[in-house]
Length: 158
Image 1 (cartoon, one colour):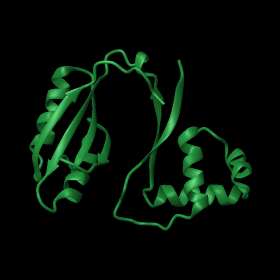
Image 2 (cartoon, rainbow, N blue to C red; image 1 turned 30 degrees about the vertical axis):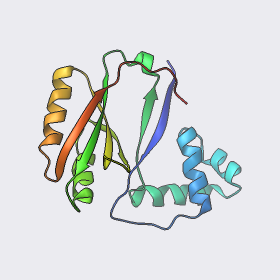
Image 3 (tube, rainbow, N blue to C red; image 1 turned 45 degrees about the vertical axis):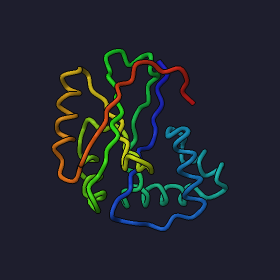
């Protein structure tokens, strides 16, 4: 089974200044979060201490919020994936984002332009569980309308 840890990054109220080395570090960790500090230091041409300190700072600031495992779609047998397009009332986007980030059924959340303000990737074990996630999201203050599409098949993953 091909498993790979990856970084989940979200915007938080705590803003840090990131330089090119931070961006390169995050790019390397997104490719393979299992890289050792020594390997990261070698690739970035900095000391191991610098890598350790930068990772700690990115974690402490909430830029890196965790590490997880990505599975190939074909090994996620019972997982239901859906995408919910969300329209937000007025200037309530930050509050809605904060609430959605606390919803366990939201696997990813994206800011978009066009008709919809946000795009949420939802994951659930059953249709009943997905229905509960949809209901909880639709009841959030600040959401004016939603449209949901259920994933049927994946043809390519980059």
